[in-house]
Length: 174
Image 1: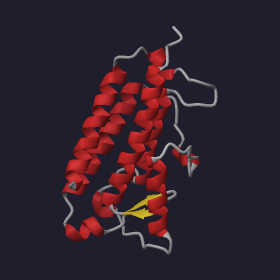
Image 2: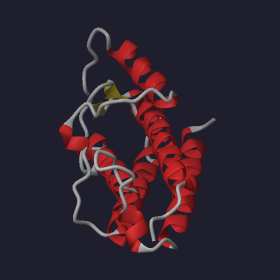
Image 3: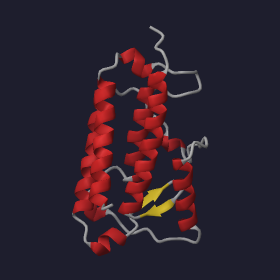
Image 4: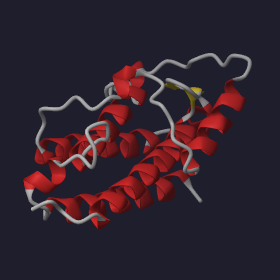
């Protein structure tokens, strides 16, 4: 699968989920299944925050610098990918990935749309050498190329979309 195809498929899946969530009443989006678990809106917030953290706040692509690899980076990347594909509970590797709160669904959607557009434009402008440069830093997986970042992002979004689906199957309290 090409990088562009992967990014477009993820964007379509993400947009379909957001379209579905847009139809829900606000209290359904903010209802927590338990006090220690995130609401649907908090999950979306986490996904937005996570992307922006890994993508370094969506800078001008010319400002991205290659991050040197370290021993163990490949193993950390593979471990993170394995954990994201699994149903094993995962702790956030950084509190910087926690939902910020205080943002509306529409605002989060706009921010997430912006992140996805930026990534697609950035990836589309890379040559073969640019695709091999590790310019993103994942808090647990370490330095990532755009393809690696897109793959982990896909796994991360898929994991949380499964979580959202579980929440949507639960009866609402209204």
